[in-house]
Amino acid sequence: MSDRFLFWAPTLIWATTWHAILYQLGEVSALHSIAMRFGLASVLLFGIALWRRERIAVSAKLHLWLALTGAIQYGLNYLGTYQAEGHIASGLVAVVFSLMIFTNAIGGALCFDQPMTRRFMGFGSLGVLGVALIFWPDMATATAAPGVLLGVGLALMAVTFASLGNMLTLRLTRGGMSLIPLLAWSMGYGATTLAVIATAMQVPFHLDPRPSYWLSLLYLSAMGSVVAFVLYFKLAQRQGPARASLMGMVIPVIALAVSAVLEGWRPTVVSTAGIVLCLLGLWGATHMPSSTVGKAA
Image (cartoon, rainbow, N blue to C red; front, side):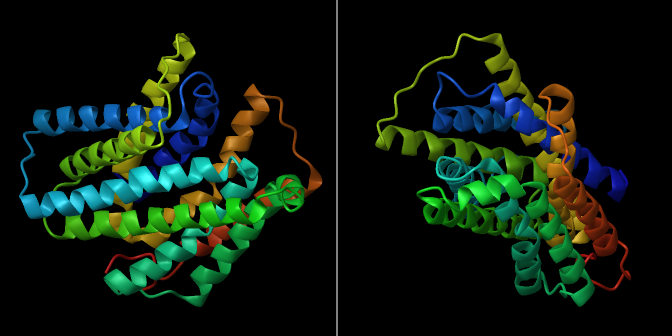
């Protein structure tokens, strides 16, 4: 698979999951929905690993690292994101998550000796500015909303957990563990973490009878979790976590295009300028000499 495919395929998938998540809102709590999403994804990944005859059994010590990775990447990260959206608009959460370009770049430099160039950081900043302009109405509203600092803090926590999960996953693959069994175990541990949190918080469990809920859950598990994360981490293995995280400046653009078709969203002058900056930032950050941050160490 080409690097271009590894970039655009998960980008397109995650852009459409924004719409799919709308069908998850209802009877089932967010904690249980996310736990079921990654629990099903874990089962699917174990099935793929068995079909590919990949080794699933790991040592007890490795299980500890897998449990930590899963709890951070697929448990606390997603819990923080959903909790943040309870205090601030989803657009502001998207802006905060675009900062993962920088946290992944810092993580890549610290963990894998990947340099952070001025060009990459500059065009990455341009892309983040573009995301901010796209969601400018949400940001203007959020600044006046109560609990905005808590919401931003939760979103920043989620971004930090996401980057830590990225670094742990890549470190484990560099240690020799195959990616698919690694994701199977870590997503299973992430689902378990969320289920334990839901139980500790005494969140009631309900089943949603709507077919749309279960179809969207299947899409989020199979495509948004299994396919997208496998391709994302394959790209991160090749080009480093910083380059892979550039998806964060393009996903909102595509998600809004989907929203325009399915939900009636219409662009404004400001949001159009933001889209242009996102695309310019992506172009500038990816058209770089082979010796820069784009290459894995």
